[in-house]
Length: 157
Image (cartoon, rainbow, N blue to C red; front, side, top):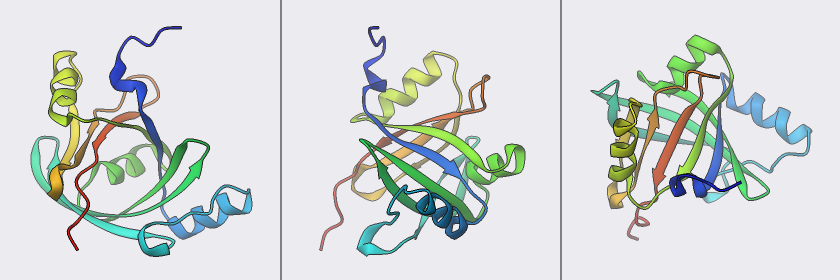
């Protein structure tokens, strides 16, 4: 089968929203998935974002942990503080599969493509170094968001 849109060629991760990231890590690692971790060898790390939620300014913090599963990461996300798409998912559908994440070199082009195709932007954030991400509105089937992430330049030392 031929892929119609090359934007979806770089699958990066599967995002799972959880209420308690430490319990989720313990569960998945007990099954043999992992190890989970983040920068500096820590099991979890918190990231604060400044961006938009439903097109309005928002700030939030999310606690994250990742594990490689083949060529793809399993990303566990616990909404920690502030109004955010992850908390909305948790409140609406509970814990579980929340989004599929792809890598892009051109975040603005992906946003334009979504809008051109009638897909709304649920949340977005820009990061220093030129990176950032956005989630599409959840799909009508399965309620899954599509994330596009542009990797920014590494922080200066």
